[in-house]
Image (tube, rainbow, N blue to C red; front, side, top):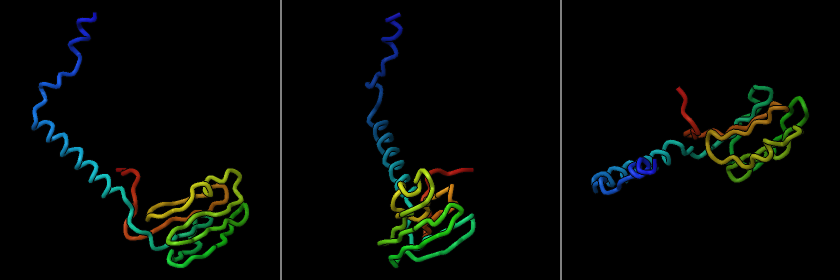
Length: 132
Protein backbone atom coordinates (compact mmCIF):
# COMPACT_ATOMS: atom_id res chain seq x y z
CA UNK A 1 0.00 0.00 0.00
CA UNK A 2 2.84 2.41 0.69
CA UNK A 3 4.19 1.92 -2.83
CA UNK A 4 0.95 3.36 -4.24
CA UNK A 5 1.24 6.51 -2.09
CA UNK A 6 4.79 7.22 -3.28
CA UNK A 7 3.51 7.70 -6.86
CA UNK A 8 0.99 10.35 -5.71
CA UNK A 9 3.63 12.90 -4.65
CA UNK A 10 3.72 15.93 -6.96
CA UNK A 11 6.58 15.92 -9.38
CA UNK A 12 7.75 19.51 -9.83
CA UNK A 13 10.38 18.64 -12.43
CA UNK A 14 7.64 18.38 -15.08
CA UNK A 15 6.60 22.02 -14.62
CA UNK A 16 8.41 24.17 -17.20
CA UNK A 17 9.33 27.85 -16.96
CA UNK A 18 6.43 28.77 -19.27
CA UNK A 19 4.02 27.06 -16.88
CA UNK A 20 5.36 29.14 -13.98
CA UNK A 21 5.01 32.30 -16.09
CA UNK A 22 1.37 31.51 -16.94
CA UNK A 23 0.65 30.73 -13.28
CA UNK A 24 2.26 34.00 -12.14
CA UNK A 25 0.38 36.07 -14.75
CA UNK A 26 -2.94 34.40 -13.84
CA UNK A 27 -2.36 35.14 -10.15
CA UNK A 28 -1.49 38.79 -10.83
CA UNK A 29 -4.56 39.18 -13.07
CA UNK A 30 -6.79 37.68 -10.38
CA UNK A 31 -5.44 40.06 -7.73
CA UNK A 32 -5.85 43.05 -10.06
CA UNK A 33 -9.39 42.01 -11.00
CA UNK A 34 -10.43 41.58 -7.36
CA UNK A 35 -8.96 44.97 -6.45
CA UNK A 36 -10.76 46.82 -9.24
CA UNK A 37 -14.13 45.05 -9.35
CA UNK A 38 -14.85 44.59 -5.65
CA UNK A 39 -13.71 48.01 -4.47
CA UNK A 40 -16.45 50.54 -3.98
CA UNK A 41 -16.03 54.10 -5.05
CA UNK A 42 -16.11 57.10 -2.80
CA UNK A 43 -19.46 57.68 -1.16
CA UNK A 44 -21.01 61.13 -1.31
CA UNK A 45 -24.38 60.69 0.40
CA UNK A 46 -26.19 58.53 2.92
CA UNK A 47 -29.64 57.10 2.28
CA UNK A 48 -31.46 56.65 5.59
CA UNK A 49 -34.52 54.40 5.71
CA UNK A 50 -37.12 53.85 8.40
CA UNK A 51 -39.80 51.19 8.07
CA UNK A 52 -38.66 50.37 4.54
CA UNK A 53 -39.22 53.91 3.27
CA UNK A 54 -36.64 56.60 2.61
CA UNK A 55 -36.51 58.87 5.65
CA UNK A 56 -33.75 61.17 4.42
CA UNK A 57 -30.91 61.48 1.91
CA UNK A 58 -28.06 63.51 3.37
CA UNK A 59 -24.64 64.54 2.04
CA UNK A 60 -21.58 63.12 3.78
CA UNK A 61 -19.75 66.42 3.38
CA UNK A 62 -21.46 67.93 6.45
CA UNK A 63 -20.91 66.47 9.92
CA UNK A 64 -24.24 65.92 11.67
CA UNK A 65 -26.31 63.70 13.95
CA UNK A 66 -29.71 62.51 12.70
CA UNK A 67 -32.41 61.00 14.91
CA UNK A 68 -34.55 58.45 13.05
CA UNK A 69 -37.78 57.11 14.57
CA UNK A 70 -38.51 53.40 14.49
CA UNK A 71 -40.99 51.01 16.14
CA UNK A 72 -38.73 50.52 19.19
CA UNK A 73 -37.63 54.12 19.56
CA UNK A 74 -35.07 56.54 18.17
CA UNK A 75 -31.95 55.42 16.28
CA UNK A 76 -29.14 57.97 16.12
CA UNK A 77 -27.05 58.16 12.94
CA UNK A 78 -23.74 60.02 13.01
CA UNK A 79 -22.07 61.48 9.93
CA UNK A 80 -18.46 62.58 10.36
CA UNK A 81 -15.59 63.10 7.89
CA UNK A 82 -17.33 61.49 4.88
CA UNK A 83 -18.33 58.45 6.95
CA UNK A 84 -21.59 57.34 8.54
CA UNK A 85 -22.58 54.96 11.32
CA UNK A 86 -25.47 54.06 13.54
CA UNK A 87 -24.24 55.51 16.82
CA UNK A 88 -27.17 54.44 19.04
CA UNK A 89 -30.16 52.16 18.62
CA UNK A 90 -32.76 50.70 21.01
CA UNK A 91 -32.41 47.20 19.50
CA UNK A 92 -31.46 44.54 22.06
CA UNK A 93 -28.28 43.10 20.47
CA UNK A 94 -26.77 46.29 18.98
CA UNK A 95 -25.39 44.55 15.86
CA UNK A 96 -25.84 47.63 13.70
CA UNK A 97 -24.07 49.84 16.24
CA UNK A 98 -21.14 47.41 16.46
CA UNK A 99 -20.73 47.46 12.68
CA UNK A 100 -18.93 50.78 12.97
CA UNK A 101 -18.16 53.39 10.35
CA UNK A 102 -19.32 52.94 6.77
CA UNK A 103 -16.88 54.46 4.28
CA UNK A 104 -17.47 53.21 0.73
CA UNK A 105 -20.43 53.35 -1.63
CA UNK A 106 -22.68 50.32 -1.26
CA UNK A 107 -21.94 49.68 2.40
CA UNK A 108 -25.01 49.38 4.60
CA UNK A 109 -25.91 49.00 8.28
CA UNK A 110 -29.34 47.61 9.14
CA UNK A 111 -31.11 47.54 12.51
CA UNK A 112 -33.79 44.93 11.88
CA UNK A 113 -35.72 45.14 15.17
CA UNK A 114 -36.07 48.92 14.81
CA UNK A 115 -36.42 48.83 11.00
CA UNK A 116 -33.79 51.52 10.44
CA UNK A 117 -30.95 51.38 7.92
CA UNK A 118 -28.26 53.64 6.49
CA UNK A 119 -26.66 52.99 3.11
CA UNK A 120 -23.86 54.94 1.49
CA UNK A 121 -24.23 55.77 -2.18
CA UNK A 122 -21.93 57.30 -4.70
CA UNK A 123 -20.34 56.64 -8.05
CA UNK A 124 -19.88 52.88 -7.79
CA UNK A 125 -21.16 50.29 -5.38
CA UNK A 126 -18.89 47.74 -3.77
CA UNK A 127 -19.95 44.15 -4.41
CA UNK A 128 -19.11 41.34 -2.06
CA UNK A 129 -20.63 38.78 -4.44
CA UNK A 130 -22.16 38.72 -7.87
CA UNK A 131 -25.45 36.94 -8.47
CA UNK A 132 -27.14 35.79 -11.65
